[in-house]
Image 1 (cartoon, rainbow, N blue to C red):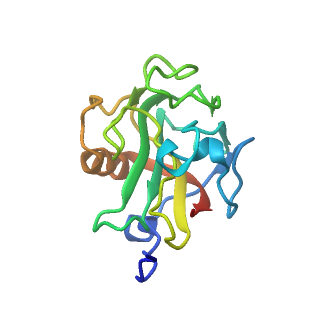
Image 2 (image 1 turned 90 degrees about the horizontal axis):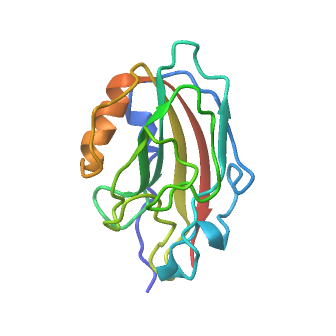
Image 3 (image 1 turned 180 degrees about the horizontal axis):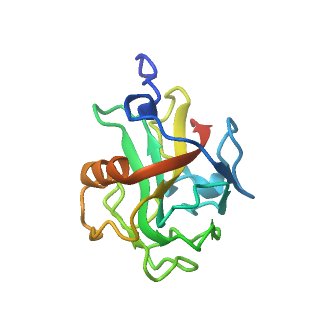
Length: 179
């Protein structure tokens, strides 16, 4: 059964405007369809976070955060697929697979939150079968503080509040997926 509903708005349209910077990846590109490695096992994928690189952020950046969000999930609050905070300012790349629960290639200071699947780290795309394309916002946030002081069990809404309060700039790549 295909769900009939309107597409959710861009979630960042409701936050204070900040400058943008560049986000690239060897695995994903803006406005493209996600590949099976970035899809959740429940939808036939491998649940591997993509490689991400960023540049052109403000000189006053003290740390970064990475988030992946699906505003088109059939919930009133979307679906958080990944939130990582406290990435040091001298780190400008995460390797493919860094979002695994044990975080290979993740900086030691970084904290991965539980995604909306209930697991720490990256949770791939998993829209309901036969649903329309969902959008996945891969975002790197340049922040004005070295640490947000949050633990891995901090709720996604609280993380979002802190990211908005400390944002200097953000870089965004939006991909789609349906199955």
